[in-house]
Length: 140
Image (cartoon, rainbow, N blue to C red; front, side, top):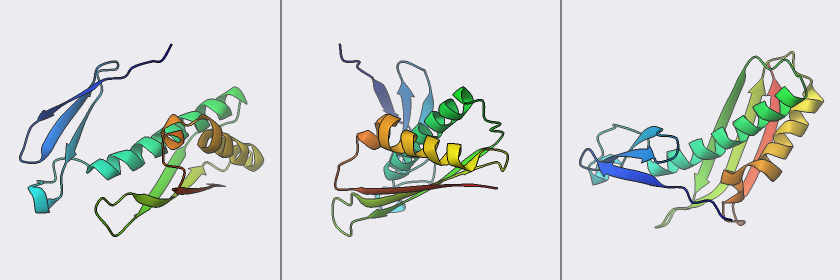
C-alpha cells in the first residue's frame, strides 16, 4: 500500500511560510525572493529542493557506512544546481560532492555514495529524468 505524506504551510510573512510535517513534526521556513516580497526569513523553494536531495543522499551514505562498520566521524555534502533561464526555471543539472573524514575507506565511500544517489535516495528518484545528476566523493 502506498504511503501518504502530508506537510502543512502557514503564511508567516509577505512571501514566507512555515512548513510543518505531519508525521515527524519537523519544521522549516521557506521564503520567496525579494522581488516577490521575500524578507530573507528562510530558504527559497529550490534551495529546499537541493537540501532534500543532499540530505536524503547523506542519510543513505551514513546508513550504508555504519552497516559496513566504517569509522565515519564527519560527512559534509556540497550540492549545486544549474537552472534553466526561463519561467519556470527547473534544474537542468545537479552536482553533489560528499566529503568524509580520511579514516573512511575510499572505495567503500565511493560505493556508498553511488548506491545512495543512484539506488536508494527517494528525493533523487523523484527528479525529472532529464536532469543530469553528477556526484563524487572524497576524503579529507
